[in-house]
Image (cartoon, rainbow, N blue to C red):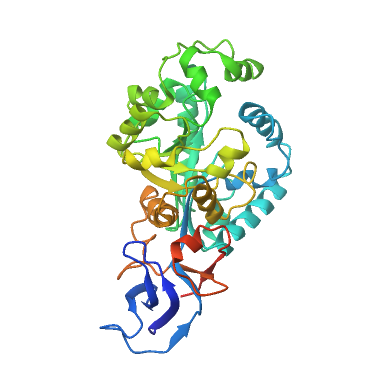
Length: 398
């Protein structure tokens, strides 16, 4: 394949400072060179001038639920987290399977057209793996298990492993499937420990709501009522009387590489544990805001060294799958945080969380999966523009 060169008024490599009047050279799908136009070592070739705007690595959405896309606009958010969960459980199985796949296809297309190149997709049914395989996305699918009754743990896990084995032959190199757990208040300790013995779970919802925190503290509250209405109120459970993060630590589930979504309710000790254990925390601020959970304390998470990335969550709780809009919300909420930190979370942070080392940055030998956001006028700070809420990234065919 011939060498191709792309020039933009700004190139944001993420792994290095932004380049004004930058050029990226691509050969065989990988970055061959980057630097200022006319810089030392710039290869010869025809330059495609993208104009005024920002050329950046493609986004990495570390927490999404594509199979819930058919629920967009159908669930009440105003009542809070637990009523929303209850409505989700009631509604998700009512849609005709063909429509579920149709909306998942549309959601995949939305990810692609808004500059996302990789996704951490949480799935309970694995009915859309072929759709991901047919897309341009790199995907890590977190096959999420639920099971509050410890007596069913082995049955649930055996069925999941059989299903994974059945899918293994049909999954290509762009799609990986890993076992995951839903949350510490919906998965029994026995099942969580069984997943740990198998090297997991790879992903979990953690410290997302007051209902979760309260239930683990004393076994009561809204979540106890939800379990009772689902016929699970009689399942024996001794509340650990600690935070969700500390509970997982006691079970040995805070393993390096775990992708923990949300962590809205993480105190200083929790944050220290997450950092020490090498957990990647995927923040989903629009979803948290919409469900009344509040926003995570981004300055504290950064100060305590937690590895951070971004996710949109599902269309059942967020307005779109445009990851830049989550970065923009955090920028508005925490304007003192350097915008480049948010851009890193949306790119390199997500790539690290999903184990995709050759994505998320622009550097020699990295995959040239790039996106471009046109700007209406000359920019002084490309990262501020990207998180302004006004930038629209489009994929760049390189």
